[in-house]
Image 1 (spheres, rainbow, N blue to C red):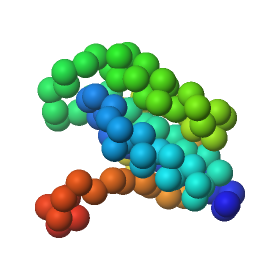
Image 2: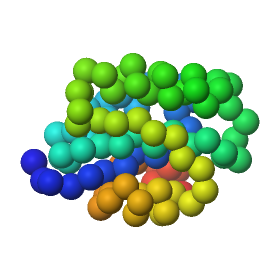
Image 3: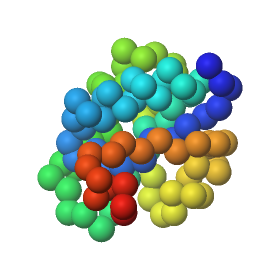
Image 4: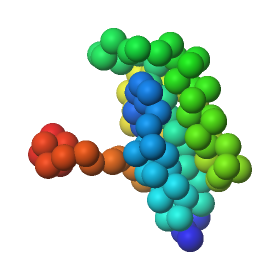
Length: 100
């Protein structure tokens, strides 16, 4: 396992089994994964920021200290740099996600 911090950003509205799978896989590649829950986003969310953070922390709990959950607003790049991140993790649902 590399000694690299990775950031997994998203709205996580709600956190799904797919998100959980991405977190699990990321912990096998990186020493630390930060699940970054977007606070101010162009999407209208179903759940509040605190509810989304709580869901993400429930998913992250089995992974111990290798996964942290934080909220962020503003530019994702600034959040990643401030946390010492060297990689970003993203999941793809369909070919259209890859094109985007």
